[in-house]
Image 1 (cartoon, rainbow, N blue to C red):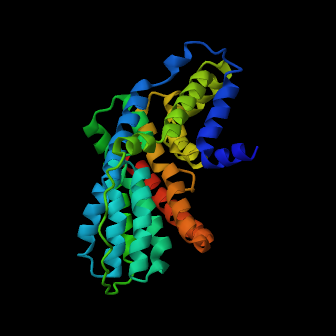
Image 2 (tube, rainbow, N blue to C red; image 1 turned 45 degrees about the horizontal axis):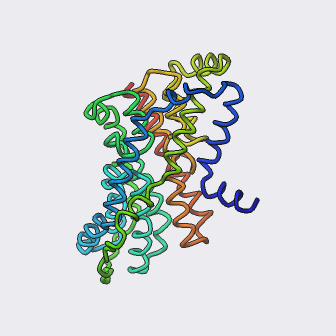
Image 3 (tube, helix red, strand yellow; image 1 turned 60 degrees about the horizontal axis):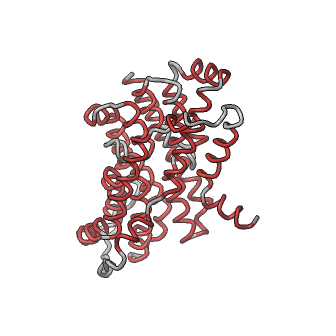
Length: 334
């Protein structure tokens, strides 16, 4: 029982998805039709992206580049902006989750080096927002956008232009937040050379892939597929979601995170552009609105448990403000 409990806590999203998928199987008899529920294009694309990311991560490509650029930073505001926008730009190509896994620990290390760990809460909160903003730029920047890209078949350029207003406003929001940080001179000591371990390289790449994330997607596809085939849920969701995709995307993301929200809404509505806007805006707000939010929280709390409550307050306040601003932008643009 202890092992099951530990696994459930470690892989809570997968565990809940699997349980719900199994429950749904009691209402729709299991058959080979289940295979048609699964969007294999999404699974294959996500797996390929995760492999590429693991290769880059094991080669320390981004960390080496960032350390070389970091020596040009001269004050605390510049340091925070650099750490934040590193997450923004890297999440465009290596997904928001991986960007935070790499650069939140790096930010904590850099702030320790200049003896400004007091800036960690604000910095990590901004990094998390930045990663969730950067992942909007390309459809390969986050799992929820990979789902919508493969389902909707919207071209890269159209995807970019659809979310561009929200990216610009969010980037300005981050710059404005940085103005609250004083400009105190700093000198970063040498961070040390990054050692690239090439032993068992391919093994580390393939074992580093998050297979539970892939299984989570499969479980969710089965769950949504079964819900579509249960008349009561089909009628309920189709009727309530139609015309309200953005608000549904925002609301659902706050409760179940934006990846399951994307899969749920795309199963009951073909207004894909509205769903894309909703789930991307919906990534801001609560700690569980995006899986990336949980990643940075866990990293910071592991390093500094004393920051837990204050971080939740600061993170939530900043996210709710940005969420309100982006909803305002949506209704203005719409």
